[in-house]
Image 1 (cartoon, rainbow, N blue to C red):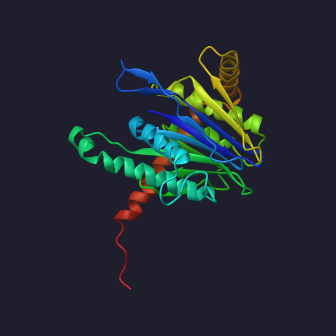
Image 2 (spheres, rainbow, N blue to C red):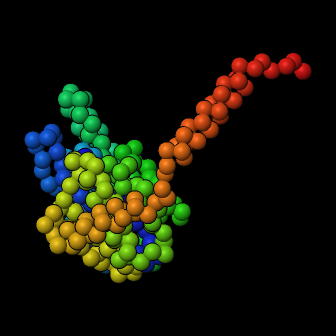
Image 3 (cartoon, rainbow, N blue to C red):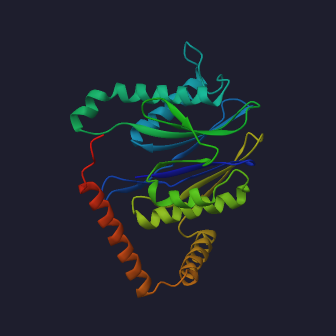
Length: 270
């Protein structure tokens, strides 16, 4: 499994991806899932991937081949005028890769699809993040929830919903992203370090990249402080007594009885 996320902020973009891949509990590997592609001086693309590793690697190979030797239609990451055009281009290549191996995949019962987060900036357009589905289409992050996730997303989603807003500074958003990743890795062993972090500031066309491994001092400090604050929060929550629980149980039973009575009462003819 995989966990990748991307945040869209007023200040720029933040990307975070784990590196763990596994084909069983005794076959664990590490592969980079955050990939940086330039194409031209006035653009930068960050591609995060989840799903079939072979499909992902072939998609990346074909993107790089097209940059080196453009295809007949001339479409590459160096020629697209908008980020959404780049998303459609990535989606088309992914579909072609899966279709090319469909017969072999069907024989083994494997799912060869992959999902991508594509982020970055093209020209003077505002930076953005798009989620590219295996079918080749895409969605944008919403203004209310300016983040995207792929892979094992359920464990870390609540933290992003709670804290990520466009006005949050990139350095603060980075801590939120790492907390979301740590929560996911703690709950699911198929997600794990090292983690690849990327921070993009508007108009820079350069990505600041960092790798955080399990022995990283900053990871240890973040984990320690996070766990301390989580435990302290439980102490500060309002007390719950047995009487509170009993009253709540009685209220729920009364409400259930009223619903049952309403369902059993026949309606009159008009």
